[in-house]
Length: 507
Ligand code: HEM
Image 1 (cartoon, rainbow, N blue to C red):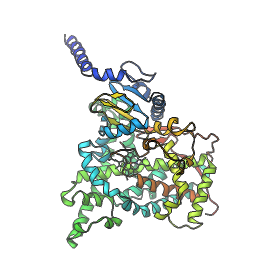
Image 2: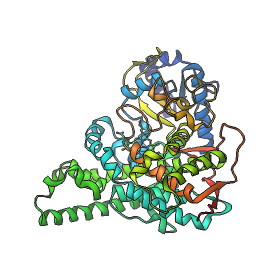
Image 3: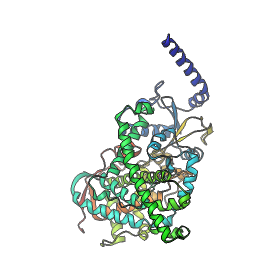
Image 4: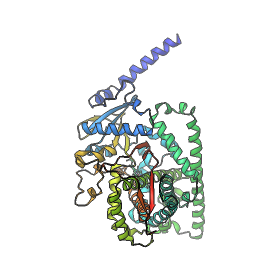
C-alpha cells in the first residue's frame, strides 16, 4: 500500500515538475543538442571519467557549439547552454550576473567572497575592492613579484640538470608566497618549506569541489556527508580558516595600536599610503574601518583573493614554460629580449621593465589565448532572455561561456586559430571585432579585478626563469601545440607541468 502511494506521489510530482518547466523544454528544443545526449541523463554520462575526460568533453562541446553558434546540454535535469560566439558572450556576461548554482560548493569553503557571491552581496563588495586594484596600487607590488620570482629561480637551480621534473610545486609556491604577501601582508615562505599545509589544503579543497560539481551523486549535502571527501573538506576548511582568522586578528590588533599612537591614521590613509600595505589593510580601510567589514567578511574576501590569485597565475606560468619548451625559436627570441632589457646583470625586475618586454607580453597573451587557465564561466539565467543570435535562453537554465571556444574560433582568429603565433598580438595585427574573442580574464561587470596584477606576476616569473634557464626536451614540430589538459576548477596540464631545465651559460 505504502509502495503504491509512493509510486503515485512520484508520478504526480514528475508531472507537476514537467508542467512547471514546459516553457524551458519548449525553448530548449529549439536549440541544437550534442549527438552524445541520452534521455534523462542528457550529457551527464560524458563526465563520469576523470578530470581529463571532463576537459575533453567540454572541449568537444565547445567545438560543436562553434558549428551551431550555441548548443544545449542537459546535465540530468539541469539545462545548460554552451556559448562560444563573442557577440552572444558579451550580452550573456552583461545580462546574467548571477553565478550558477554549482558555485554553492565553492561558497561552502570560502563563503561569499566577491567572485562567488550572489549579486546582492557581490555589488557592495566589488565597489569596495575595485579601488584596491587601481594600476598605481598594483604597480607597488612589483617588488614582491620580483623578489619572490628570483627566489623561485634560485631554487630551480637544483632541478636544472636537463632531466624532466614537475615544476608545479615551484610555481604554486611562488604564486602563493606573492599572493599571501600582497593580500594578507604575510611572508608565507611556501617556497622555503617542503610542505605548506595551507597550500596542500587549498589544493585538496579545490579537488573536492570539482568532484562535487561533476559527480551528481556527491551534490546533495546529506549524501556528501557519507563520503570520505566530507571529512577531507572539513579538515581543509579548518586549516584555511584558522590561518586567515589568525592573520586578521593580528592585523586588527596592529591597527588598534597604530591608531592609539597616531589617532589621525584613518584620515591619513590615501592611496599613496598603500605602498607598504596589503589588500587586507585596504579592505579594512575601504570598507569603513572598524565600522566596515566584520572578521568573517574579511576572511571571505581574503580567501577569495588568495584562491583567485594562486592557481590561476601558476597555471599561466606553467603553460607558458611548456609552450616555450615546445618552440625553441620563440624561447630564444624571448631570451634575446631579456638580455637586451636586463643585460647580463642580475638586477631585479622593476615596473619600468614591463613596457620594454614587448615580446614577453605577446608570448604570455598567446599562451592565455590557447590555454586559458579559466576555460569556462557559468552563469545563471533568471528570466527568459534573447541573445543577439536570436536564441532565447529560458529562465532556470545556466550559460556556460566557453572561453576555450571563443579563443579558438576560426571565424574570428582565422584558419590557423589553433597555431601558436605570439605575433597575432602585434599592435598592427591585433584588431578583434569583439573584445570577447580574447577574454582570459572574462569580460563585463564581473570580469577579473586582478588581471593587471596577474599579468605582472606571470611575466615576472617567466622572465626570472628564462633569464637563467633554457626549457628543453619538449620540442614540437606542429605549429598547433598539443597539451593534455584536465579540469580542476582551473584547467591544468595533466602531467603536473613536467619540464626539463638547463642552466644558461651566463650563470
Ligand atoms: C592568470 C591569472 C588569472 C586568470 C586567468 C583569472 C581569471 C578570472 C576570471 C575568468 C574571472 C571571472 C569569472 C566570471 O566572469 O565569472 C576572474 C574573477 C576574479 N579574479 Fe581573476 N584571474 C587571474 C588572476 C587573478 C588574481 C591574481 C587576482 C587577485 C589577486 C584575481 C582576482 C579576481 C577577482 C577578485 C575576481 C572576481 C571579480 C568579480 O566577480 O567581481 N584574479 N578571474
